Image 1 (cartoon, rainbow, N blue to C red):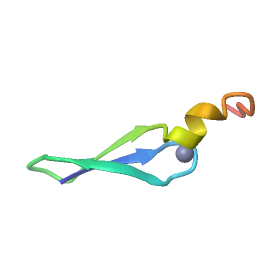
Image 2: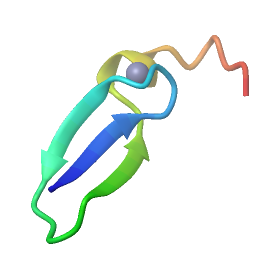
Image 3: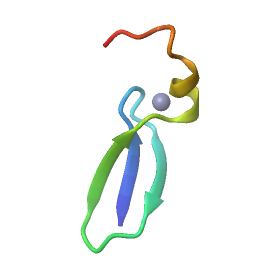
Image 4: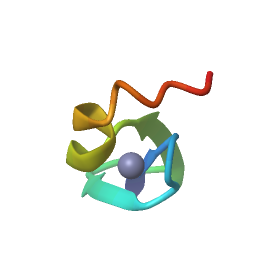
Length: 40
Ligand SMILES: [Zn+2]
């Protein structure tokens, strides 16, 4: 099973079907709204 993790706050966003254990990084809804505080 694959897991989607927020690269900003490390919270789990969701899961997707995969044969292997996979982690994808994205942004959750809260961090998407928080573009003003961009430390990267
Ligand atoms: Zn986040």
